[in-house]
Image (tube, rainbow, N blue to C red; front, side, top):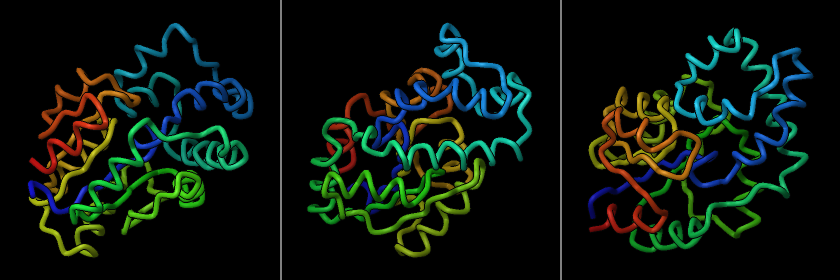
Length: 209
């Protein structure tokens, strides 16, 4: 077995939340008196790191925390609109069946994450670290390692954002970048992930072979 533990991100990696985020963007902007998202700038923004987005929209970090809680509450109310990417349930079933330990580290709330997973009858994930601060994933990754007893080099973080890769590198954990999330795969590849996954099915193939 190539990896004994896989630590997944949620939004944009397991769950297809980006269309929902776009649908509520104007409502959030109006609620916090921010400039609205220009649809023509979406592709450009997807290529930027969080720090650059904050600077472009003149958002202090403390305000982003408040906005994050507001958005999570909105998602709880709209949770029926959130689905998983095709093949995710089969992937998790198969990985768990081969003895790979599974974990999830997300900035989203535990309530939202569990409601989506339970709707799809997913209960294979053994470790949860939710409600993570914007730049707090490194510490949570290390906590999962401690709980699982798996050394960093035998674990793999799987995600779709530059901050995910940066946190994994800081925790000395190999990273697998997905091509279907928030950030274009070319942007993620420039940050030297260990693995690159173009489809959900490739995760199983590259982890176990």
